[in-house]
Image (cartoon, rainbow, N blue to C red):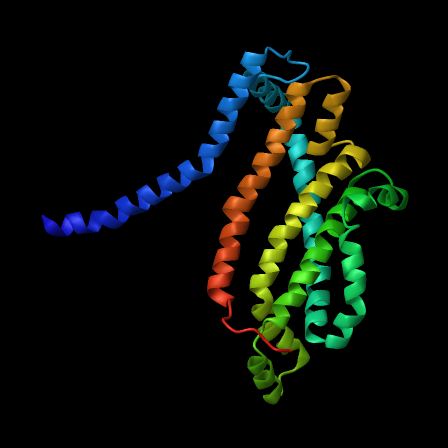
Length: 273
């Protein structure tokens, strides 16, 4: 009788941990919805000013049944994916090179600090002049918003690699290509993943803003079009979709990736170079 009881304990603890995590995750959201429903009912504001929860749910149902939800969601996710891929391909080699070379870092650091303040939304007007209205302008904004966060974190990640490890790799005659793939990139991964998490937040905001101005599809475009027709229920529904989508992406993908990367590649020492 004792053996089966012992075997069930880990499962029960796992279920309890999962339930507690789900409650901690959804509890504040449920509380916010409850306050929203009570406040709108008590104030009696018209739907045109601020909708009730049921109105927003109805707008979500309309977007689903009409197919507009999938059209806008697909356009936004496609642009986000392309912009993120371009940012990774361009920012990581550049950031690692800055971290590995003090001279390059000192030369480009003022430019990086200057560009961080202008990254993303501030580039929308010139992006529409360069690329017109459509996917290319929005993708450029996503890339621009993510590039500097990824570059900076990749640079910091390389600087945190213990100097002894770098010297050992050089003393063994490691080529530059192997140094990149086997030492610098793995050593910088924890910081890179943190930069990816931060950069995706910037990129997501840039995406929504760019779609409002420079696109004819996407979640940002749907939000802006609803404003023209005083459809506050659709506006709030679009905002809910954007927020929930990012929350799920961060909670289910980025946070676990960051945690596992730190557990696998995290280093205890910091370089003095």
